[in-house]
Amino acid sequence: MSLISNGKATFNYEVIEKYEAGIELLGLEVKSIRGKHGSLDGAYVKFRGSELYLVGADIPPYQAGNTPAGYDRHRDRRILVRRGQALGLRQKTESDGLTLIPIALYNKASKVKVEIALAKGKKKFDKREAIKRREDSREIHRTIKGYIIKKS
Image (cartoon, rainbow, N blue to C red; front, side, top):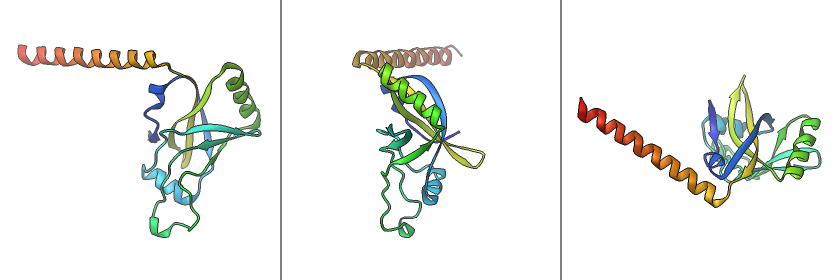
């Protein structure tokens, strides 16, 4: 069960592979995430040397009154993966032109984990096609539901 998810990720990107990783958080951020406060919209994963960082995630403080003075809710947060895995991901992103995006933040055995994905950006016509498929599916379900109700 995800605590925070990136709703636009599957619309804007075609997900190729998913990975689970730890994330380095402050205590007030963990409590805020467990309260389902925060957003991954517009967030992405960036390489710095052989480490990964979550950039652009918005995690508000748990209690605004008790927050340290220098707290930045949009700060970069380190993603905890093994060095070999990080280098492998870097190679895939550079050679294949892929992007690393966060999909969700969730609990696993009292730890907060982040699900990241190797993804390829969708073109505008792909997005239009997805919208058309979704609307057609809704219309079919509405028609079937209306037919069943009228027939009963």
